[in-house]
Image (cartoon, rainbow over all chains, first blue to last red; front, side):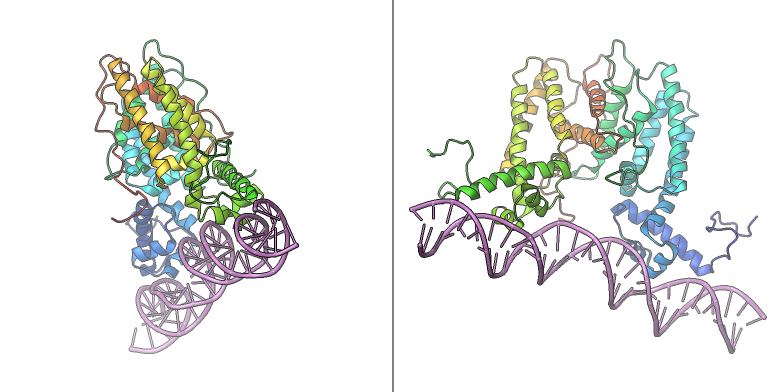
Length: 222
Length: 222
DNA sequence: CATCAACCGGATACAGCATATCCGCTTCCG
DNA sequence: CGGAAGCGGATATGCTGTATCCGGTTGATG
């Protein structure tokens, strides 16, 4: 419908299009946001982002009134890419292998993205795009888990609800101060995956999987 | 050598003993420190501690010039208690069970102590008492790991160096926002322990265990 | 090319927070 | 009872991140 061919949309379709330089800057900011959040985490400042993009602070604040907004835009894209990984995993025949492969790919991505990891931990950030992507990922995982069990590869009692804690655990390993940024997280993922595999005469898992809070984990009191 | 029978020592033996009320307050502060750090983590303020102890801020700052000092005193005690757990574990016959039991007991302690968990993660805090306790724990674990392997219970390639990452992983589960403070971490510890058990025709673990940094993980640049 | 709205830059005001001190008053000790 | 040791907590200080404002610049339009 539009006249532009370069696959990106501005915010509102009804609104007047941005001036050419403004649109360019918008993308610069988004890209800078990706890089800065990946390197320094969500606690990076919009001023940091602006500086990294080679732009003035004011420019950034005009486009994205606060960090929340920019972060949602950035991680909306990022989570969509991970959702795509999950979608592709469903094509594989061996469901357990597919699940394991997805975890490895997604976590490899997270390994180089501190902001993404922080997002995984405390699920602040409640943009529509984010929850959509999250839901898609969850759904794919549900299917994979179900199929892996009917295929007899998955230990009894393991649920989709166990996936997030597992990701969190690996994330913790990545966050550990280490000599050099390394790949040791793969070692611990391997251990966990082996613990997840079905085995003859295996003790049942103690307790139910962790259930996430209904809403808004940020606040202290209800 | 001393005349006091109530098993606590002041700082320097050569120094003049504290006035009775001052000594009482010293303990009050230590206890308040334990409680506050456990509940609110290391980011709690000395002012918080003072208030919790029912004392003035000045009193606290006179005894412990900064948070670092108090925290080291508090967690020195705390880590010693955990070291004792490790020491007792060595008495058990089944080394794998002993190791598992120790992890469960220590982590159960950590579950109710946010400050202790934060200490486990980023190993800031470098007091002599702390490093001593840490070393003792490490040593006990080394022995348990070695013995568990000669008993054939432990998977090939698992090292004492894997213990800290495992603790970190479980800690991550505990830190996850959850409906109610719960015991689900036991579920994930069970999974990991099963991944750690020796099995016939088991794939070797990928990569070496994580090696901690030589010193001072707090700083950014060398 | 002229004109003007849209846009940019970044110094700076503001607010929240943890840290730490200072000194008049109180309590213990001998 | 005298004075040293100890106490309290209001308050000064410094730091950090957030966000605004407005004079100057640039792109769009006829």
